[in-house]
Image (cartoon, rainbow, N blue to C red):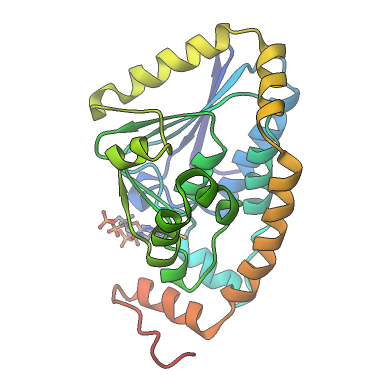
Length: 255
Ligand code: COA
């Protein structure tokens, strides 16, 4: 158990708050476990009609904890709960809403591709620097992102780690709306309350008609195999060491 995920349930809304602000809500295996447990339980919980994902502090999340990537690469850590988490997102039938402020890096952005309504604070910035870390995309983003925003924009995001502003994210269909940062909570509350009043059976049936979870989770498996292979590459070791040493990585010795 971790106290870095805060959960609350009220009036049909399950709120999952990533709460590790001193590390920009970087996600650890223990945090993924709580998120996966909560999402899986919400599927079966008749009291949950909508799920809201948030981050505490200045950032939504800085993505996977890079120290844990390094530990997994060295054989000392597990990535099982991140896979459970992304699959629970893909398999979830209830409306998923995200309210995003500041940086949303890596899985912080790719999880949004599984959400049904995304609200951004005007300071939000989405980025997926997988290749910059010598990794490959995850959470089916190599399938979902080009489908959503086109190959060229997706390639810039995935291959170059090009950040996307809140305004562009809305224009490209990655989010519904931007609001001033101070209004993010109230804007999210309004949409989740509206969704919670809708008939749940019809909502679930509509989500199932709109998404093919089987195709998405099968693509996750293909990505995961590549991801694990890249994780232990010399390039990736250099990436993780460079992050820990607060310097730019040098990939030129590797080919
Ligand atoms: N994993 C582990 N620790 C992380 C982290 C991550 N993904 N992101 C941030 N942190 C830690 C930093 O090491 C720092 O810890 P310290 O205070 O003990 O030194 C703390 O969180 C604050 O981060 P900092 O980099 O000082 O904040 P910033 O505002 O200057 O920059 C980011 C914020 C998100 C731009 C920057 O932290 C970053 O690029 N993080 C890595 C993002 C990433 O590549 N994630 C993986 C995607 S696959």
